[in-house]
Length: 109
Image 1: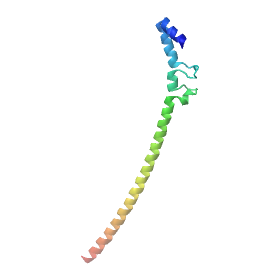
Image 2: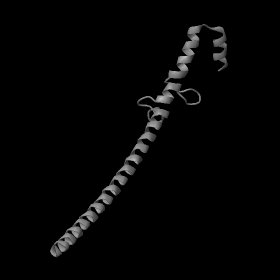
Image 3: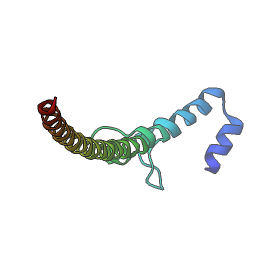
Image 4: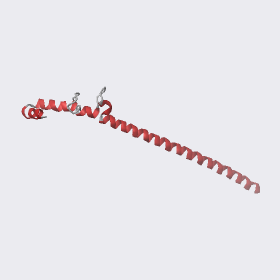
């Protein structure tokens, strides 16, 4: 890091830009085992960062949340089908009773 600081103070603009680019898109790991910031964020195909990057973890999290929401939606939909099926059965029973009652009242008329 001190070499970079000295170079930053003494060298030109293009070396500074080169250092910035290297920090952000380097495909080599540094002494801490990290790659460039953008590759750590987005990942690179064929590398451990492909599935461990913050974007891929966010996508996995969203996929799980979507799956959970779809399961909850399916469960709710099934409960509504069951509820409306019962309602339709009750309505048919009421119609049957009404028809019987009307036929009984018609017999008196």
